[in-house]
Length: 284
Image 1 (spheres, rainbow, N blue to C red):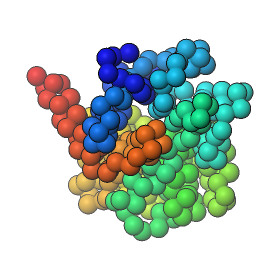
Image 2: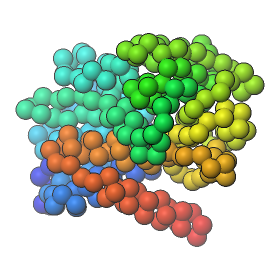
Image 3: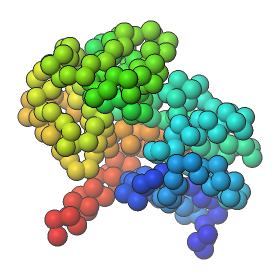
């Protein structure tokens, strides 16, 4: 432990070295006047989460989890009887682990974070949703949009069979949305919101016009803009970025870990500065 640090937090995953979470959480600690708190990025491969957690001492307060650990944490929490927020089971995974009263508590701040990010940019009902991709992020954003009133969620995926877990997750939402999947962009239906959870080199900008969406939710943030985001900006659509999602869910994590709230603008400014610095290094 570094000198002066009494409370430790971190983001866990594999890969994790490019995560912006340390930038955001450290900015929050600075704003809250917590010089004795630290937040690092720690590589934890899939299948090793239990062993890592067993090695932590009492100085550890909170953990953010990214791929491939979100579903692994849910299973581990069940095995060990840890408290889980209901949305952890709804989403089929957890991204937040906080020590409270000597015990760990799991949550998923991606869902309320995604909903807050959408509401910041778009106030119309997102009744019809088209999601490109069928993984954990697709499930989280799909559920968040159902929380905001989506009644129909369509997934555009390479394999409907491999997306069955995500389809089932969204179907379990209390609002009982219509949920379906297609494997061809030619078969997609009109949508109010287009969500992309796939890599930039797998994106088809023509989906902006084909879907007729008024909002793009682009889960990526680096590099920016992605092909879909650039097309959306040219077309005058509202755009929610992966940075918006990361910032809003991090604000919720900070509140759980520290017990204090921090303005969204503090984290967004820190994230934007870090991305500009990365872009500058990439050009040099």
